[in-house]
Image (tube, rainbow, N blue to C red; front, top):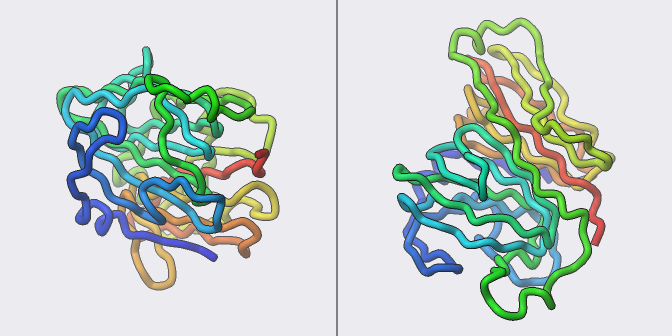
Length: 250
């Protein structure tokens, strides 16, 4: 199955929620699935948006499922690393990260998971977290800043470009690339016979699918073993993050 969500709808349905770690009020909305789950593994993607309050801190924690995390607006710090638009994080399941500290103008992140599972945050500041840890590759990678094109440069691009996002060597099926397409151009998505499915995030321009134009902040998830997905740019072109999950190693 191929899932698609208009980013405008997600932004328009933001509502106040309390951080499960500190109780501080910030804002959240979901693309696919519940915001958090403690359920057994089930099919279907889980993707949520969180907009942090000014100067808010999210405490160090881990999740029971692997995730990509996009930083599309605001600014802040992930440990000692500055995060700002546009940057991407990948972390394996049961891999701790943080603290994540928003700047004075807030910070937005979008967490992407390829399945619904035990995704509720487990905080290192609370007792019992060690008993919940499981083996994993413990990757916690944050990309360099990703530069997007101006509108005319994007619109009149003549060739498709695929650019790797992470500097580290990847040794499994996981991949993260930025694809750049001029107006009306199209390209096949990644080989979906390997890996655990992939997301396409509209970072700049728009994506056309089944007669609908998906603007910036929109999201598509292509489930594993789905037929090839055509990534098609809208009338001003498209720059999209394409993020494929590794095969499950639980």
